[in-house]
Length: 259
Image (cartoon, rainbow, N blue to C red):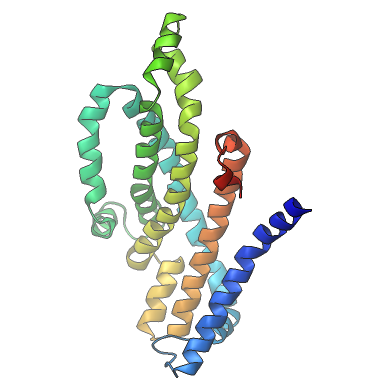
């Protein structure tokens, strides 16, 4: 009975906390008489969502697929490069400074270059989502492979295991929790990248809708677009967490993780 009550509480908690957040938001706006131009109330944003629902759905669909395309590229590239960095000290020493330096470049500064190369369209958002989200995957996969216990390596080598066997049979399974942890970070970053590029280099997408709403001083629609982005991000994060639980549930042994 206690376990069922805890499970029910965990299911209801996100909805209760989210509803409470919007109730407090509504109360603060009305109590302090904040202008809708500065901070619209949730009820006004909900009215804007209903009014512009077709536009929001259309642009959200484009943002979702461009983000997923960039995220997919980041997963493939990040996994392969992370395995290379984790398996080879030479590759790690030679490549890591380049990766850190590239990641330090604000991606908004890269968007104009992508526009020069590929023009305005769907490709700059996809590439920006990729560029901004692959780094956490590379770092976490490399960390998972590089932190194999020396004692484990010694035992496996004594049993005749090759370096490839150690990486495939021990390193990759060990890196999986790190990998899925990085995916939950990378998917939210991918949305940031695609929206940045849509704002400056696309005719579709939520970023483009936000740019037009900002130009028209339509603040409720601007916030409605932000809510749409938040919903997309939560959906993709939840999907990633579900896959993580199915594939790496064995790694969550702590009582704190289970509660």
